[in-house]
Length: 220
Image 1 (cartoon, rainbow, N blue to C red):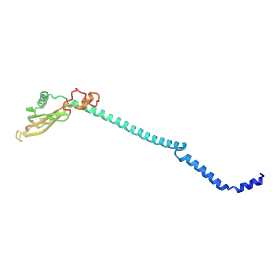
Image 2: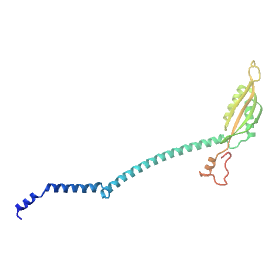
Image 3: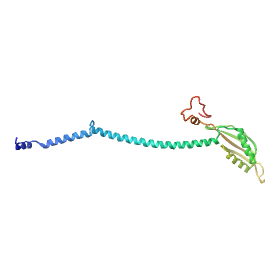
Image 4: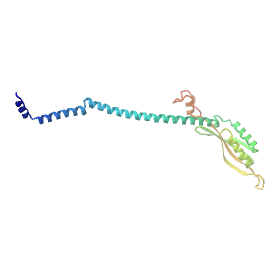
């Protein structure tokens, strides 16, 4: 076949449709390779996307863990502070209540300021969740300044003492230089009963008090 015949043959072949079909085939092949399931590229894209999601979730967990440990550290400091406060409170809110000893203490403080102690007697105890309240009926005679100094001295002792239910009246006439008073007041002392939490702390923080372990007084 000479050159002219080959050229005439090429002129007769419809190149444009063939090129279009070829381009369409190549385009479809690329599209299926890149986007359709079952091909490596699509699988890699899915893996990359999953890795990004896993990384985001891991970053969130790490952030949550940091916040948790910061909160845990803060809670530890709060618990240490509360434990210190509790120990200080136990120093003034004792776990025993010596009624004769307390009566002697009150009478002695009254005598020191010149207050005439007529009588002092214990009343019925009042049970609370963590403590027992022991009131005393205190009858006295004396001057106003003696009563004030007496109450100040009771407030200064190293245990919790409360004074209320005042019933006071003048015993001498108002014409006297010093007006003598007489009356009754209630003086209340307290005993710390302990709690189940104290028992758990002594056991090293167990979730439950072990079988046969005695519970502290007043614990549920």
